[in-house]
Amino acid sequence: MLEERLDEVELPVWAPRDQQFEFIRSRIVIFPTRQSILHPRDLTAVLPHMSVGSIFYHFIDARRRTQEGIDDFRLWMRSFPDCGPLEDQLKQIDPYFSTLAEIRAELAAVFQGFFGEVECERCVRRMRPPSARPVILQRYAEVVGEDTMEHLLELAEPLRGRRVVHVNSTRVGGGVAEILRKMVPLMKELGLDASWEVITGTPDFYQCTKGFHNALQGDKVFLSSGLLQVYEETNARNAETLGAVLRDAEIVVIHDPQPAALISHFPDRTGKWIWRCHIDLSKPYRPVWRFLRRFVAQYDASIFSLPLFAQPLPHPIYLIPPSIDPLNEKNVDLDADEIRSVYAKLGIDPERPMILQVSRYDRFKDPLGVIEAYKLAKKFIPRLQLVLAGGEATDDPEGAIVLNEVREASLDDPDIHVLLLPSEAHRTINALQRMADIVLQKSTKEGFGLTVTEAMWKQKPVIGGNTGGIRIQVFNHHTGFLVDTPEGAALRIRYLYKHRPLIDEMGRKANAFVTENFLVTRHLREYLTLFHAVQGQTERIEVG
Image (tube, rainbow, N blue to C red; front, top):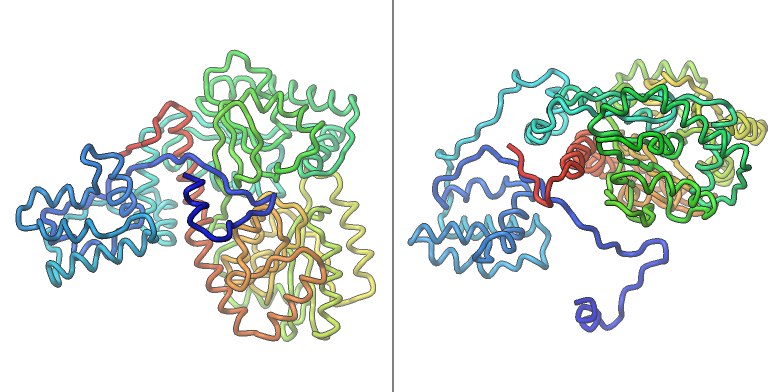
C-alpha cells in the first residue's frame, strides 16, 4: 500500500527525523445520541448538525462493520422503496479524500436536493435534564455543550464505584498537580471512587528524580549508586505507607518517574497499573532510561502525551494529551478592576506593551533565552516590558539556582519583572496572561506546555519553543509562532507588534483550537475510555 502511494507522487514527502509518521491503533467509543429518525427525509434537517463523529461512524466505519460493506445511510435506504435514486446519489460520495466536515456537507446537500426543505417534527431528542446532573458537571456543560457532558455520563456509568488511585510526587507546582486537582474531583462526580495520593522523599530523593527528569529529556546525567539506592528505598517506604490503598485499587495511575518503582512492591496486585509519563521521552539518556525501564515494563499500560515521546515497551501504549480546566481560578474570566489591581500591585505600566512567560524556573524553560529575546526586541520597541512569572515546585531542587541566574541577568533593566509567586496565586497568573499582548514559552524541552494552552484559552498568540507538545498547539501564522533561538523569538515579537491586528486574529484562533482539543472534559473522556480498555474492552466500546 505504501509503495502504491509513493508511486502516485512525483516527489515523495520526507519527515524530519524527530517528526516521523506514526501508525496508531484507535478505539471507537459508541455513544447513543438519544435521537430517533423515523424516515430518511428527516435526515435533511438533522444532517447539517450531526457531529463529525457520527458521520465517521455511519458513513465510513460502517463499511467494515456491516455485512453488506456499505454505509449505514444506504443500508437504511433499502427499507424505503421510494429512496432508490437517493441511494445511488450517496454511492457517488467519496469517503476517503474529503474531510468529515466536507462529507457532512455533501450528504446534507444530497438529502436536501432529494427531499427539499424539511422540518423534522418527528425527530425525538431525549437527554437527561440538567437538574439530574451534579451542579459542577452542569457548569462544564455551559462551556463545552450538553452533548459532551452527556457522553461523559454515559461513559462513566459502567465504571461507577470503581476504585481509581492517582499517585504523583507533589500537590503544588507544575502541570501534573494542576491536572489532578481537577481531574480527581470530576471522576468522583461521575461516580468513580477516585483518590489522589502523594509520595514523600528526602532532598537526596528529589535530587535523584530531578536528574531523571533531565536525563529522560536528553541530558547526560550521572547518578551515583547511592542516589539510585535512595530512590528505590524511598519508593519502598512509600509502598508500605500506601499499601492498603494501592493494593485494593482496581486502577492505579502512577505519574512520572518519581513513584514509578512503587509497582515492584506489589507483586500480588489484582488491579490494573498504568504509568503516565508527562515528559518528553523521545531521546532519553540511555543509562538512566535502562534503569527506569525495568520498573516501567512491569505496568499494564503506559500513557504519553505525543507519539514522538513514547518508547518501546512490552505493553499497550496510549496517547492522551493533557488539558486545562476552564473553570479554575487560573482560567475563569476576570473583571477589569481585578486586572488593573494586579498591574498596580506588581508595578507594571498598563499603557506600555508587555510580553510574558509563565513557567517554573527551570533551565529547559529557557528564561535566560527569553530575556535575551526581549533585549533584542526592545532595541526596536523601546517601551516594551517583560514579565517572568514562576513558582516553586516542591520536587525541583534546581529552581532556586535558576531563579538567581534570572535575577542577575535582569538587574540592568527595570522593565524586566521577575516574579516568584506562591502556589495559590492562580488569579494573579490569570490576570498576567490577560494583561500580556504576547505570551512566550521558549522551552528547549517540553512535555506538553500547559502554560501555552492557558494563554491560548485567553486569546493570546504564543511564541513557543519548537519542541514537544508546543508543536501541536502553536501553528505558525495561525495561533502563534514556533522558534528555535532568542533571535527568532525577537523577530516574531517585532513582527506581531508591527502587525497588531494579527495579535487579535491569532488569539481568536488559539481560543477556538483549545476549546476543541485541550479542555479537561476531553481529557476526562479519554481517561474513562482508557479505563474501559485496560479492563478488557475490545476495540469497540459501546456505552449507554
